[in-house]
Image (cartoon, rainbow, N blue to C red):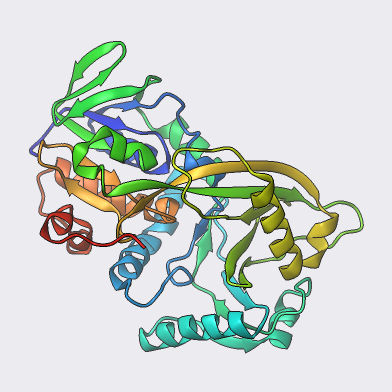
Length: 365
């Protein structure tokens, strides 16, 4: 791709909006297609920017790409404005022996990989966060960040500098986008439609799939303890849960994770599981007001890496970010800008190339 003038971005979640903002700032004329801009999975996310606590053995490329993006986040946020960026770090808690064993696997992996994470006892963890319940052990990860995802989306939409077309895309290729209103031609097309990307392009049909996640938003009431000062992640009887405090006093609790196609209904089971796990970790939430329940669809890929690169028909894929759409927005936008300018693929983006999917299939886990 060399010096395009008109760029289409399909999808207005955090990735699509970040791409649109960066491209428009670089001088391209950008049109964003989405029937409901800003109201994707990004809207119901927890807001964690946490490549280290998301790390797991065998996913080194995911960790390295996440860290590359994390380094960009302070400048990315400063350019946008007040996005509620928190630098308080993350604590990870284990409640029983089995959970502690799983945490030990993560801690050992991070230590061998040279990442900053400190093991602590349950008593030491409760000194840091007095509202925690009976936790067995923990891990401190000071370098992780968090962002107010809704404030971020509003700012990206306001500063995007793009034309927004609120219509469902029914077809696309490297030089056009089709909606019910007709076909529009472009010099470049970027597909950033999250979980629906697999429905919009055949090359992604067996690569990107929806994974449902439910979240809760809680507010403390008079007499209850305030939310924790840091993001708290935990494993409760084998199930992960996170509690992310917001500057306005809200607490985001998430997230369930299961295959349900494109269903976005909030289930009673999901709410119950999240409340029970959150109360085990931070007992005072039992007295909080339940302010909101919501569900979104993560755009999961077959190997948990996003797909960043040109597809056979010239469309640029920026999809499959799994749990890390917010975290990876800066590097994704930078990868798209390199492509638009005709520059070589950055070294850090090579592992996420679509070429890996054509070389050998990777089993979904």
